[in-house]
Image (tube, rainbow, N blue to C red; front, side, top):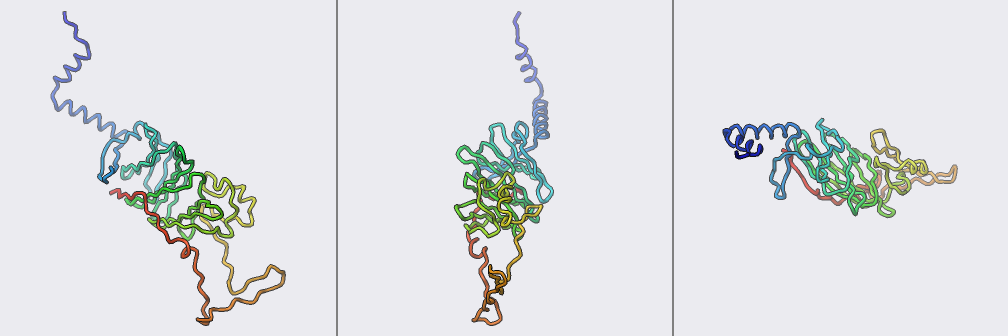
Length: 284
């Protein structure tokens, strides 16, 4: 009597089934996978949209979740190959991050209808690298920067986000203005506080020890992370360091009597260089 293995028997039975039954079973399995992990929409190197199964959500690990200004949700995930990505759930869109050993959501700020997300990446030869995402609706812009050795200090100034890295005795400052990032090197303002190491803590603020040692010069930070500058000093009168002495009022602009000379602002002097995004994505 000829012995037929059970696996062969099952294969023969499966082959004898109608084609539409096999297709139905396959479609059901795919539907279960999509329902469990959702689909993933990405772009290839040519910018073409690719639709596939989100393996990072099915088999990977969710690192952190965050909320966008429009109420949508995003997640930072680690895939099965230790690759990191961001997924915006409303659009089922996956934004891959550059190769890294680890990643975390360092800072999330809602600026009007736009959301700023700063991802801290640690690479093999770079301790601190930062990927900045500016998201409004379906519009996503992304920049990558950092000096590999320091965390930056992040604050709000005049409704715009400011990201400062130490650069010798100066600051390398990035300013997020809507969907643009402007960059310049500036001299620290008087209320900035001393440069210490570490330059910033895990919350991307000046370390508490720095604030304590320079309490007289440390900047004022509100509860929502907004930088509150000190009140301006009138330029008409300056008080001397000698008690009871007052300097002569500064003269008015002689070319235009009755009108003060306009001093150039720090932004006009510094922020003249626009940093092009690493990538721009339209989620529609």
